[in-house]
Length: 193
Ligand code: SF4
Image (tube, rainbow, N blue to C red; front, side, top):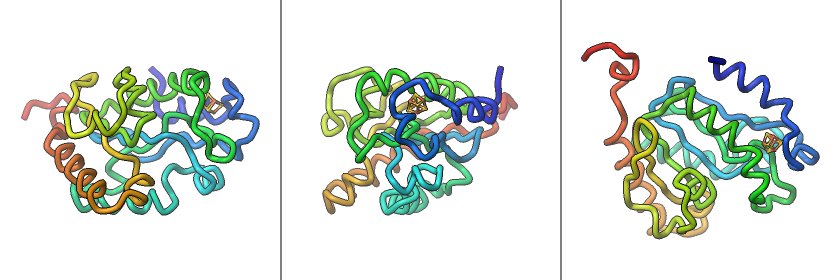
């Protein structure tokens, strides 16, 4: 089985979809390769494309702050990535064929990190991983069985920054819910408690 670093090396040269043409670099994802929490957003923006890291702008700073405050975790503890690894031009939504082309990278990340909790940010990641057409407003607030753990959908931090107090409170509640489902690290390592 390849390591996450092996998969990242391969992904950095990916040209499977048209988003390769306009990107500065592939934004693979970053964080603890054995994280219990994996956070999945939509796609890189301008700052992420320039730096090669996900969630480095205002939304990212907000995301880091609420995860630290509600879950006690930093970027060194969790893993964060996007549904598409290259920036869509003009920050448009990723197209269905682009999501389909890129999702094998996300599947490999899920296989290798093997988180107990996946938090999806916004519609794209939530719809893709839950295989549903329902929107985030209807889907959030619940816990869904997912792989060997659970999936907890919440709003994208950019939407929370636009949406104000109620959305912010709901996102925090979702993160509190996520914390309750984190698997103790010792169990993940296969060591009896
Ligand atoms: S968006 Fe994904 S599939 Fe498309 S080129 Fe980038 S890494 Fe490859």
